[in-house]
Structures are given as structure tokens and as C-alpha cells.
Image (cartoon, rainbow, N blue to C red; front, side, top):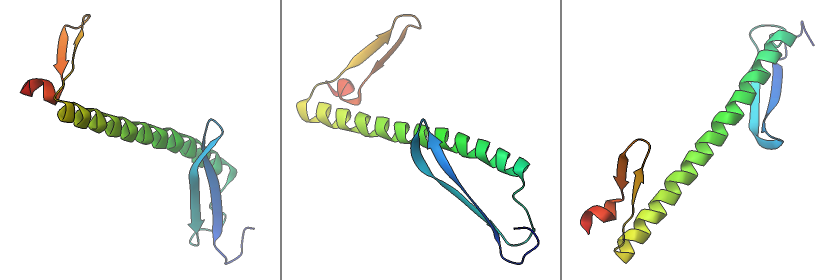
Length: 100
């Protein structure tokens, strides 16, 4: 309610495709009625973008974990892997391949 001395609070869910990723909690005790309809709309858009960023960070973390497991497995078994991107001509290989 505007005009009172208690802080204004806003809590928005951070959702990605119906999956709750977190919450955006804001509290303001300096400016009365800080969370106008227009500002809430912008904050909802930011919460949506935050959900995408959080999902990307989780995916990247999972990829790093998988790559570490693969590298460890190749090291233990003394096997390696390599690849060739035909369209670009790029050749890449695992760390263990360089030791073989």
C-alpha cells in the first residue's frame, strides 16, 4: 500500500518452461510505491532472462562435469579420442590422445 512507512516488497518466481528455478525478492524502504506496474513488467522480463541464464549455467556445469569424467576414464584406460569437423576441417583430440 502506498504512502506507508513499511518497506515495499516484491517477490517474483524465476520460471523456465514451468520449472521453478528460483525467486527474485526485492525490498525497498527508500522510495514509496517503487514497484509500479511498468517496473514490475520490466522485472518480470528480467526474471525470465535470469531463468534462461541459470539454465545455461546449469547446462554448462553439467557439460564440464561430463568432460571431466570422460577425461578421467580415458586416462585410466589409456584410450583417447579425436574428431574431425569435415565442413570446417577442424581436427580436435583428447588430452590422453596426445600421450599415446
